[in-house]
Image 1 (cartoon, rainbow, N blue to C red):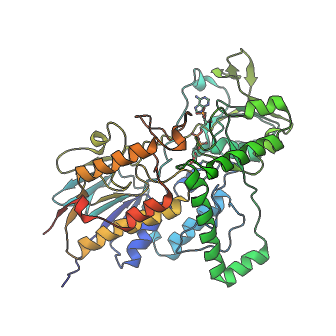
Image 2: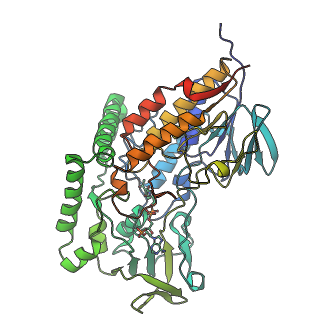
Image 3: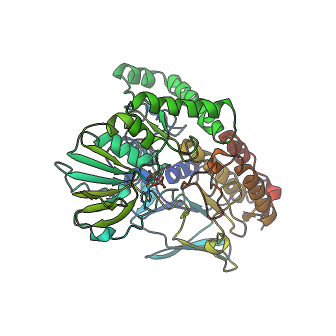
Length: 485
Ligand code: N01
């Protein structure tokens, strides 16, 4: 007969993944868990990013927990503030919030005597299982540009938007044309006195109008939850079989996506000179595809200047480009992305042999099935290395990873095992298969992007999203070093 034993769990991060994990623990009647959150609010990326125009570029119907549909989304792809409210609401209504220690930054976690000792400025506490839910794009990346710190006006990163600064009557400089830069441009273009966009590489833009849901639709979705579920399944199927498939398999799908991006540019930008500036020299989807409705319209509005000359340096009055032109500015926004290789770091994670995660990841972050690391027992990472991120709903990925962690947690609780970590061999085999498949993906077709790791390979999942789900739904105990009582 299986015996259940009491166990406790530490979750690091109260963003979308951390809240998801907490709900899964509660559903399994595990109430002894703590969520450490360095900030003073839940929401992770949706708390930190507040820039004008922020919205999700995955349909909201699908970018929701499958266990908590939301009939009230205002738009097809809802604004960031609304998404933040949704996660806060789920944390409150599921009783997760009282488990959160706000303002508690985890600086270390060490595995000793079969338990994880989680360290904050308040000291250490021991847990049976450690879940990291620290997000993927959390650490802002600041560009190395000569003289950047000499600029006389305010300068901030897009993920640290300073709302105390009025945009009224300002000449705004925007460095970066990734998903963030595009959303800021779409929102501010034509609404501020001047917007100068410094583009290093143009982007392919997949046409995606962001329609509002009518009151009647919302009422129907609230009245008949089955409609919500149908919407979820529809958008899941659509996204996984278009974007999810085109990225990893050559064929009609990929060609169609590329054609739609080209047509979008051709039909939206009539001026050939402008169109040339906006035409990438790489395949659509090589960088993360931009899904936007009115970027091209905004970029052609009066007062918007697209600068394609390289930035040479910054001086107190503005940005000087390689052609010697000074672009005078009042405010400089750095939409220059994130360190996508930080994962759980700078938190120092060390196992019972004194090996750190930094040591193991010296040649780049890697994991077993995106979630566990050899030699680090009872550690599960949500959104770990090679998760199927990119143009997918990270919410469903977090749910699948949390379910996988729960499978092991239940084994520990049932007394079947006391600790488990993947074997070196299974992890190596998995990573080798992945590396070979990665070479066939669109991400390797000759562009620079934040996807690419130190080894030049994309840190993404090289198969369809469904394969990741299958891998996590079928845990293989023979791939693990298991300790029993
Ligand atoms: O960052 P990025 P992002 N001089 O790294 C440029 C997610 N996201 O914040 O392309 C000049 O994509 C850089 O140029 P280049 C999403 O996963 C999601 O926009 O490298 N330019 C590029 O244009 C996304 O992929 C949503 O040549 C410099 C830009 O800065 C990820 O976040 C919304 C430079 C950085 O683009 C990151 O997007 C927003 C320099 N020194 C973001 N350094 C959703 O809607 C960098 N650049 C879900």
